[in-house]
Amino acid sequence: MAEPKLSPGVYRIRPLSRERLYLHLDQANSHVSLRPLVTPEQGDQKWDISPVENESTYTIKHIDSAFTLAYADEEPSALSISTKEVKTEWIIKPSPSGHFSFTAARKANLAVELDIKNKDKILFNKIHPNEANQLWVFEKPKITPSSSSQNPTFTTKFFPFTARDAAEETVQDHDIIVVGSGVGGGVLIHDIYDTNFRIGSNNAKKVLLLERGGLTFHSHCLNTARPVDLVNDRGQHNDFFFHRFWGDFQIVRCCDRCQDICNRKGPGECCGGPAGQCCDNCYNKTPSFWSGGPMYNLGGRSAAWGLFIPRIHDRTLQVHFPKAIGDELLSTYYGKAEYLMNLSLPRSEKAHRYVIDRLNADGLAAVPNSRVQWNWARIASEF
Image (cartoon, rainbow, N blue to C red):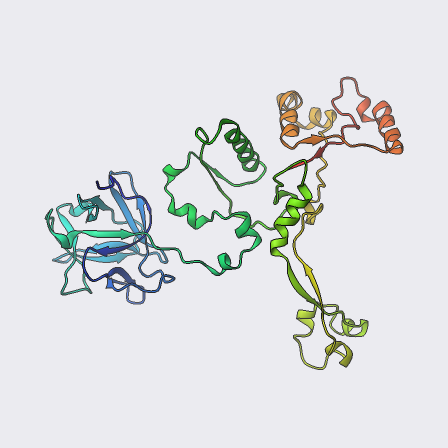
């Protein structure tokens, strides 16, 4: 049984014929024709098919250019390409054999047809239900392993589901799509994940998170790796994960004189300059090797918040926030956020304990009905 509708996505388009010929865009001459399969990496034969509002109606755009599939108006009409803002709409319908016929929406009585004798021009002809030359195959390109998948990086291992994988799925494959993994989207995704875990896989929602930004340490390293076990093996789990990306680095320590000549640049910048800058001893020095890589640590650029999450003081809430927001934070959302981040309380030394007691007795926390307590030095165990 034929599928009722062509799923949107990237395809190669070929006629149903013994000789495998594909719809090919010659970008240099702005011409569309039928050609044998090119190498998988080239995009000359890949077309992005997107649905429009009408049933079984699509636009067909070349994946690597601004060209869209159109038709020439001369008689007999033929396929062409266009850069116009208004795109040609195509009706693509399945046949009982499982293959497809496609026509221009404004030429519904004419189907795109293979002319075996002329592969440089693809013409229209009157629709005939039994005409094999009017049947077309829409093939999903096979994704060949890239160099990044052969040599996995932190990003590819941490997020094996790529944007290309997501593009090949239809919108109907996901129940929820969240754009951005920042303070809003990230917390929302975390909550949905926990909900899915509680309700079980049969009732869970399928969620797609789209993130434009980079991954590795662009903000805070504690926002990347999330240990599986929060109690027993947090350090061991992270060491095991990050150790996959360790490598041997060559370290050459030059003398102070040579470092001054190179303005304290790294070995790669300094030694790549004109010959004779380094002294003989440094130039011939055997490098030492250091095995290392990314690690799971506190700190990280300007976002070194150290997991310390104190509440905003009551006075700040009263002066700078609407009363409704302050009340909701204190009554509901602080508690939810602290539960989400696995709030833990510190074990203070006696000297620190004394300072905390004085602050609670005489400091800002000594305001009547204050929600600020200095012994609540809130630590986010995991976020």
